[in-house]
Image (spheres, rainbow, N blue to C red):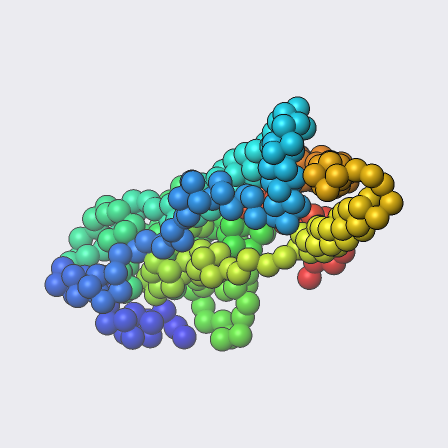
Length: 319
């Protein structure tokens, strides 16, 4: 719809802006112009969740058994691998969590707002739907807005669209099914003015903005298994069953055929079981994925969970 009609719908005067009492009413109704962030798990819980992998649980059992057998070198090696694995995973997730929280700060800025017929510089958190915001080169856009006036206005929208070239903005009407990257009469929270001048009418704030929707998607994201974690889980279960089966067969065969006592046989069977477990696999897997995450970080790509690197590597087509 035309910008004038948008102003009418939002009951705002394009030249005078909103008055103070209306701003207070809208702040109560819509809340502050800030993006919610998912409450992160405590560091202790995050650290202990690193031990949830099936293969790591097998290693913990193996390490405990070697400790009972007083094989201290084996015990030290196994628990060393388990702890190193947990530390690497915890550090990576902690760093990624901080980077994701930065998304909430991406729309924080100070902007020139027209209120009560006067221009005022205010923090972006105080902006409400219907506010008239002036945009100049170098300004960070504080909320989603319909552009009311533009003069050589160009905006870098790469955080939303991936398009590295600044978009030249206009004020005319576009069809309602126009995709986000081609809505040249709109400006979005968190994007940056690279050139020119403009005035926009705020239409969405906080979590309702396009940047806010990304943050909400992250909050609602479900934990899913990747091909690698599925294969490791399957392998771990099969390995555990195989070890238990062979251990029972070995113990029964030993009792029937040899002259050893049950205690001696039990100790030998336990030692064989521990020897079968690939202690280095979880560490090798975690370190390999961590290196991949490091390479991605250098390219400014944030990987929150280590196995996601493997999923990305398995991708053949991106639409």
